[in-house]
Image 1 (cartoon, rainbow, N blue to C red):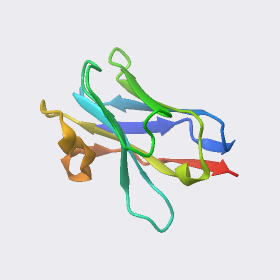
Image 2 (image 1 turned 180 degrees about the vertical axis):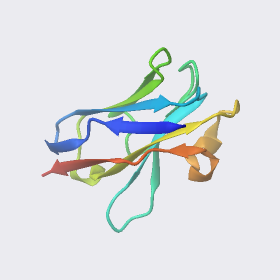
Image 3 (image 1 turned 30 degrees about the vertical axis):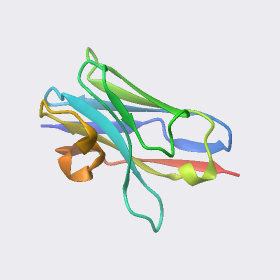
Length: 125
Protein backbone atom coordinates (compact mmCIF):
# COMPACT_ATOMS: atom_id res chain seq x y z
CA UNK A 1 0.00 0.00 0.00
CA UNK A 2 1.36 3.37 -1.02
CA UNK A 3 1.58 5.98 1.70
CA UNK A 4 3.00 9.48 1.94
CA UNK A 5 3.21 10.73 5.51
CA UNK A 6 4.12 14.35 6.15
CA UNK A 7 5.51 15.73 9.38
CA UNK A 8 7.18 18.86 10.68
CA UNK A 9 4.40 21.38 10.34
CA UNK A 10 3.47 23.77 13.09
CA UNK A 11 3.24 27.37 14.24
CA UNK A 12 6.19 29.69 13.73
CA UNK A 13 6.77 33.43 13.81
CA UNK A 14 7.51 35.37 10.66
CA UNK A 15 11.18 35.12 9.81
CA UNK A 16 11.47 31.69 11.36
CA UNK A 17 12.14 28.28 9.85
CA UNK A 18 10.50 24.90 9.60
CA UNK A 19 11.55 21.63 8.02
CA UNK A 20 8.89 19.40 6.56
CA UNK A 21 9.48 15.71 5.98
CA UNK A 22 7.57 13.24 3.87
CA UNK A 23 8.17 9.53 4.29
CA UNK A 24 7.03 7.42 1.39
CA UNK A 25 6.27 3.73 1.51
CA UNK A 26 4.86 1.10 -0.77
CA UNK A 27 7.02 1.76 -3.81
CA UNK A 28 9.91 3.79 -5.15
CA UNK A 29 9.07 7.25 -6.43
CA UNK A 30 11.17 8.89 -9.09
CA UNK A 31 9.94 12.43 -8.51
CA UNK A 32 8.77 13.99 -5.27
CA UNK A 33 7.60 17.42 -4.33
CA UNK A 34 5.33 19.72 -2.39
CA UNK A 35 2.16 21.68 -3.02
CA UNK A 36 0.26 23.93 -0.64
CA UNK A 37 -3.21 25.30 -0.22
CA UNK A 38 -4.08 28.35 1.84
CA UNK A 39 -7.60 29.04 3.13
CA UNK A 40 -9.80 30.35 0.36
CA UNK A 41 -7.12 29.90 -2.26
CA UNK A 42 -6.36 27.35 -4.91
CA UNK A 43 -3.74 24.70 -4.47
CA UNK A 44 -0.34 25.83 -5.72
CA UNK A 45 2.97 24.25 -6.56
CA UNK A 46 5.84 24.80 -4.15
CA UNK A 47 8.82 22.66 -5.11
CA UNK A 48 9.84 19.42 -6.80
CA UNK A 49 12.94 17.27 -7.02
CA UNK A 50 14.02 14.55 -9.43
CA UNK A 51 15.15 11.05 -8.47
CA UNK A 52 18.84 11.81 -7.96
CA UNK A 53 18.25 15.37 -6.87
CA UNK A 54 19.99 16.83 -9.88
CA UNK A 55 16.94 18.79 -10.97
CA UNK A 56 14.68 20.93 -8.85
CA UNK A 57 11.87 23.39 -9.46
CA UNK A 58 10.57 26.09 -7.13
CA UNK A 59 7.65 28.45 -7.22
CA UNK A 60 8.79 32.05 -7.64
CA UNK A 61 7.22 32.91 -4.31
CA UNK A 62 9.59 30.61 -2.40
CA UNK A 63 12.80 30.83 -4.44
CA UNK A 64 15.76 31.73 -2.28
CA UNK A 65 13.88 30.85 0.92
CA UNK A 66 12.93 27.18 0.51
CA UNK A 67 15.11 24.23 -0.42
CA UNK A 68 14.09 20.70 -1.29
CA UNK A 69 16.15 17.57 -0.80
CA UNK A 70 15.66 13.83 -0.59
CA UNK A 71 17.18 10.75 0.96
CA UNK A 72 16.44 7.83 -1.33
CA UNK A 73 17.73 5.31 1.18
CA UNK A 74 14.94 6.47 3.48
CA UNK A 75 12.46 7.17 0.68
CA UNK A 76 11.98 10.60 2.22
CA UNK A 77 11.77 14.11 0.83
CA UNK A 78 12.38 17.27 2.83
CA UNK A 79 11.33 20.87 2.48
CA UNK A 80 13.46 23.34 4.39
CA UNK A 81 11.57 26.59 4.76
CA UNK A 82 13.47 29.67 5.88
CA UNK A 83 12.50 33.31 6.32
CA UNK A 84 8.88 32.30 6.56
CA UNK A 85 6.17 34.85 5.86
CA UNK A 86 2.53 34.96 6.93
CA UNK A 87 1.56 34.31 3.31
CA UNK A 88 3.30 30.93 3.56
CA UNK A 89 0.52 29.80 5.88
CA UNK A 90 -1.15 26.80 4.28
CA UNK A 91 -1.61 23.07 4.37
CA UNK A 92 1.44 21.55 2.72
CA UNK A 93 1.00 18.36 0.73
CA UNK A 94 3.68 15.92 -0.24
CA UNK A 95 3.41 14.53 -3.76
CA UNK A 96 5.14 11.66 -5.54
CA UNK A 97 5.32 10.29 -9.03
CA UNK A 98 6.57 7.08 -10.61
CA UNK A 99 7.16 8.39 -14.14
CA UNK A 100 10.61 9.00 -15.50
CA UNK A 101 9.89 12.35 -17.07
CA UNK A 102 10.76 15.37 -14.96
CA UNK A 103 10.38 18.92 -16.16
CA UNK A 104 8.41 22.11 -15.87
CA UNK A 105 5.21 20.07 -16.17
CA UNK A 106 5.72 18.97 -12.58
CA UNK A 107 4.40 22.35 -11.48
CA UNK A 108 1.01 21.02 -12.60
CA UNK A 109 -0.86 19.13 -9.88
CA UNK A 110 -2.38 16.78 -12.44
CA UNK A 111 1.02 15.26 -13.23
CA UNK A 112 1.42 13.78 -9.75
CA UNK A 113 0.20 10.29 -8.97
CA UNK A 114 0.19 10.25 -5.19
CA UNK A 115 -0.66 12.78 -2.48
CA UNK A 116 -0.18 12.86 1.25
CA UNK A 117 -2.78 13.98 3.77
CA UNK A 118 -1.08 17.30 4.40
CA UNK A 119 0.51 19.10 7.31
CA UNK A 120 -0.48 22.54 8.56
CA UNK A 121 2.03 25.37 8.54
CA UNK A 122 1.02 28.59 10.25
CA UNK A 123 3.23 31.69 10.21
CA UNK A 124 2.27 34.44 12.61
CA UNK A 125 3.11 38.07 11.97
